[in-house]
Length: 168
Image (cartoon, rainbow, N blue to C red; front, top):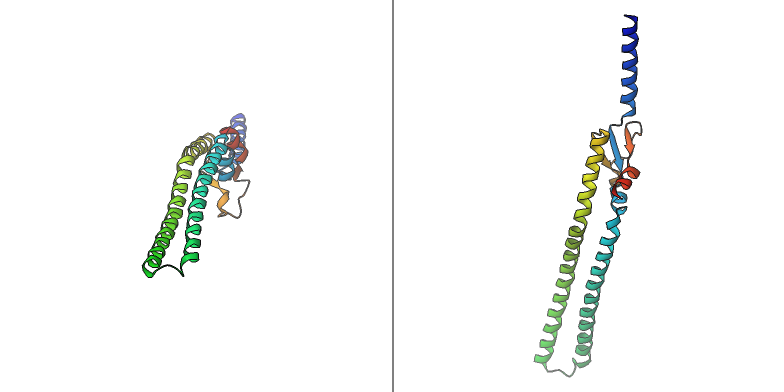
């Protein structure tokens, strides 16, 4: 009987120590984990190249507009009224097309970045799910949003390094 009581006491102490060792949740910087992925640099390079192409086209159309505007200013005194109005209309249309191009290019760049980053984000989410299940977490918190000004390290575990190693 004494042995049984000792055994039960040992088991309860062991289980309570083990429960204290298990963390309820993990926390990490999602952006740091994403940026640590080997393919992240490739995506960033592709996006930089695409941005450069859009910037070059934007510069070209701005130069075209500026050239036509300077020609307009130089000749406006000598133009008959109908030619003056035609040139003003051309400049207005060109300016509107340039503005529309800039807006469209921003949308296309954003969409291209989302599509390029999607496989990385999926892989990171899958990795977090695997780590969360393996370690028995109730949830994993992204500390980048600053929504949690305090995290008790006795209840949670910093998994930044663990995640970064898993993604390599």
